[in-house]
Image (cartoon, rainbow, N blue to C red; front, top):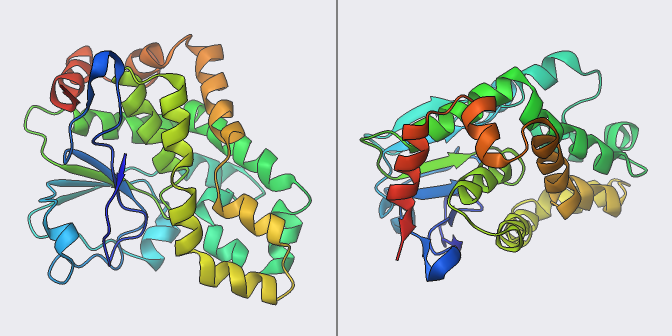
Length: 266
């Protein structure tokens, strides 16, 4: 996975170049991931302009989209696929993946909901919800169906930080392409430096206001245990990622094969 040095999009990465079995790799320029796009400006950002995006899939909640609406290039379609709608509607505690900035702006709130090691448990539960809730299944079905459409062009998918909902989406794509477990985990964790850089001012303010640095790091970063929770749920319910995608999400076999044909390069 290649980090793209954009000036108006945080944590922008191309899945292209990720190694696959038999000496193959993911074709570049076709499927990309990032954080929110409220500052995206192709006119002033050559790296973004060069992507020639055709489709943008936004995994964020209603509140996130309202507070920071996407800006997308002219000619690109914007598709909303709200992963956390069900979790936000039914849980008394906030889904931290959707409220990173809110939590880090209030140390007392962060301590109440995610302090003392609770962040790890909350994120693991959120990741399991990526697999089990109806809104998440619909969102990831939409994403993979768009990626496997006959007329698909370069597609970018994102959430707020580009690490949790987006990280699970990237895991699904790489799994379908045959990437091994070590590669998938390495690519999942590789976003940490970019996310920490993007949230550095917010974290510094959080700590200056009395917030626990360990809580901040748990909220803005990803760890293997988060991904393992989702994969454990997949294997317990469906046996494999392939079966989960085809039967759990309802993505057609034709879409899966087109994804492979388009994205697996020599």
